Image (tube, rainbow, N blue to C red):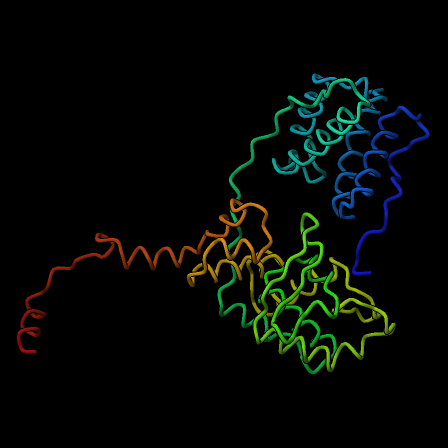
Length: 340
């Protein structure tokens, strides 16, 4: 349903290595996250990164959490720094940070629940992160070109136009769009209920009249052609009558960008970034954008205060006293001016 990953079977974490093995404790840690209600995507990320750490330890005959010390974790951190991918490139600073963050979280859990007397990862410092540079947003003209691409006379084309409009109008994340149910869109009030957004938080967001009109058209004309199970709650359905996967949605949106001649990198999130940037440029308060995007911290939203270089040049030319070159008037120009 909705492309969500099923509960993981921990294929690479082998509890047969013993009840006190790193693999067994990592499995218990991941299962505790499921009990706490963490999203499948968060659990999957932890699983992948802890699998990497457990394999690295197994190659060095480190089998139990009690064998792990601060110097060993520092060796692991150096390993990540010098590791090269199959294309010869190093891991990004962000990727290295996430790998360490999940290891730190694992050992913090072990110590907090008294499975270890001390936390060997408590003083491990995270790699310094470069300042995040957001991708260049779409212009309003580019957005309209993208919206015009889907063939709305086709069932799937009409569905895709409605999805594009919702992404652009509300700024919801890809996963939040896929989690929408039919009754989450309130056509009368002009709102969308986002359930279990990032951090497991629900919120209401406004949706524009144009997007609502396309959703209504999709509900009237396209969804009845796609639905196979009358009890299926997902708003947007695949050809098979089920919720779409993240990969399918990303590919569809990227294909529409390409067909519209948009060369800027990105897919669903680029529409979210574009919405936030254009609203800020048109005078929206950053705290309103924070609420709209569902950001827990204002610092995250303030990244969207980045505006395009064209906008900066426009403001610079209009306000900087030395921005314009003063040209000397020629004699002929002076005579023409005198006659007028």
